[in-house]
Image (cartoon, rainbow over all chains, first blue to last red; front, side):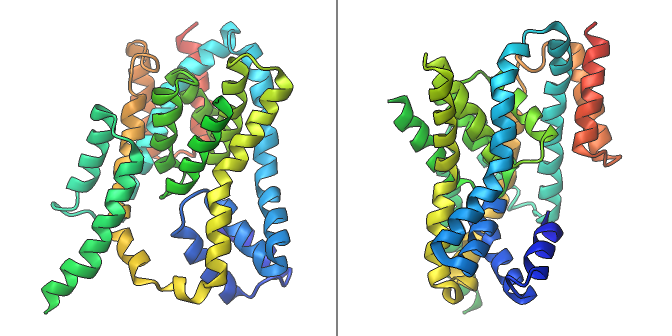
Length: 157
Length: 183
């Protein structure tokens, strides 16, 4: 999706390429929906709060309308025998479609024998003990800051 | 009451949803399925499947769908349900809006902030755990009804993992498998 956004935003002369890359890297470190974050950033740069509102609306509206149509329609067809058969096939595949990015992300961030404990503990706490993922996120932020700013620095001294 | 809950839950998802759509799944699941029982795990899986077929992000898609369904199931009219759908969608984007506006005002300071950089030492590995939890939570009897489900899972996993089959193509193939195997 990135080249798509970049082409539109840069070629229209709304932002320079450098500005866009800056915004992109900050938008990645924010919570929430990435496409929405970046559109609010771009909108704010061009026309302040009004621009941010319009751009947010623009990025939300297509998905909103598609899913609303499905929500209105799907409740009527979900009991259809053919739809039921298709969805019985889709459900296990959806689990596979989540499991694969989990493994590819694990590979790309190069977990070692120590750091691999973090995702395993997080997954087990949520899965078996139903701990809210909010606590996992908060703990990992605090842990990361402690590791990066206290532990690493102490080791260097 | 349900209106406030919807606003609260989706605001929270928007605020703590680090690491992209897949990592956001366990956050959404935890509240809408287990805590408030707005939809069943099977329905939730169906929404994820629909999200894979449509271009939009799962964060928006789930908010729109669950906003509608939860209000509808609470006995309100379709018009009110559309309002619920709008409320949840706005709620999930609200934290982004507040954060981006706050950061834009002090952009240079935030760009190479050492606290933000350090937080990701913890957030990056945790994200993997959040995605794993989402997958594990979906591995239950509602989604895996028999041996055929397991076969579909293994085939899908290998196709996506080894042969890099695109998710949309995979959804299509899985639909065909379901149609044929459950005839």
